[in-house]
Image 1 (cartoon, rainbow, N blue to C red):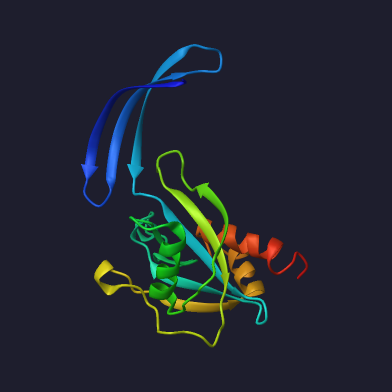
Image 2 (tube, rainbow, N blue to C red; image 1 turned 120 degrees about the vertical axis):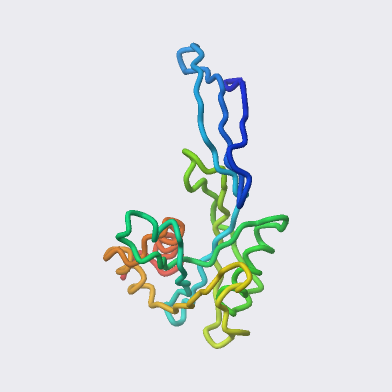
Amino acid sequence: MHVRINKVETLSDDWYVLRKTTFDYRRRNGSWQTMSRETYDRGHGAVILLYSLAQRTVLLVRQFRFPAWNYGGSHDGFLIEAPAGLLDAATPEARIKAEVEEETGYCVDKVRKVFEAFMSPGSVTERLHFFVAEYDPSAARGEGGGVEEEGEDIEVLELDIGRAEQMIADGSIEDGKTIMLLQYARLHLFGAAR
C-alpha cells in the first residue's frame, strides 16, 4: 500500500462535493511524506463524437460555460464541444445515447466505446468514457438544444471534419475532450490523409 488516509474534510457539498484529504504517501525510495490535496467529486461522465463518413462531417454543440467566461474576462464563455454528460446512475452507453438526443435531437442506436481517460486528475475525480457513433444527417428526431430546466441552451453544429480540425488550430475549439475525439476521428475514422 502506498497511501494512508489521515483525515477527510468536506469543504463544500453544493452542486458537487469538494473535499480536502490529508494522507501519507510512500515515495519510490520507501520514505513516507504527508500531503494534503483538495478533490472535486462530480461523478463520472461520457462523451461522444457523432460523425458521417459519407458527408465527412461531425456533429458538435456550442454552449455557454461559466468557468470559461469567468477565466480572466478574456473569453466569451461559449465552447464548441462533443455532446457529453454525467452518468448519474446510468451506464455509460445508456447515458451517452440520452445525451445525444437531448443535446442534438439525433437518436443513435449503436455507439462504440473507444477509450476512457481522467481529464483533470490533479484535482477532479471524474473518469470520462469516450464514444463514437455514425449518424444519418437526415434522421434528426428533434431540435436538440438540451434540457432547459438544467440551464442548457445548446446550439447544434454540423461541421466538415477538415473545418473542425482547422477550428482546433485557430483556437475556435478549445475543449480537451472534443479535441481528443476529433484527433481520434482523423486517425481511425476519416483516415490520416486530408
